[in-house]
Image 1 (cartoon, rainbow, N blue to C red):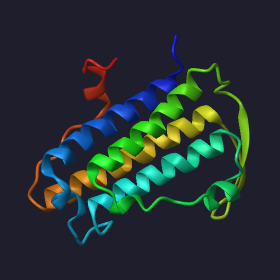
Image 2: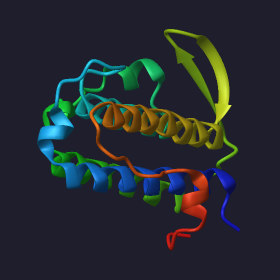
Image 3: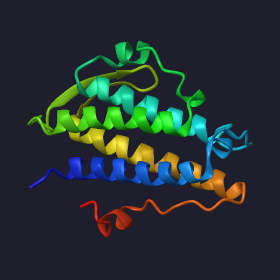
Length: 166
């Protein structure tokens, strides 16, 4: 049986695809539109999500938090929605390859974050963090779309359960 944390990560990938497909429908003008909200544009939210997913992937692979924070960040907020989808696909393929390679999800890694200090946490906990972080920011995107009179999409876990993705 697939580990619960992997199932939740797969939900995260599905939910991002659902949101990205909606953003594709709306186009780059809406994607890059300046807005007064939590972020200054939807592209900045998506860029933040991508950078954080990438950061945690490096940490899961064994890179220290301080080293992972120093890895050069691609200016992803200037990319088109099509380009960021391609970047996300490459990253999620790397996650999938790693997760399907028999990784010990209960393996404990030591974190040393500049904002919260030292902590030990398992790879499965990190996957759950990635999933909840993504859900939080998809909510930001939904609010930003509604603020500009655009319809969003449902990315709730229950929608994933009933989709043909499982």
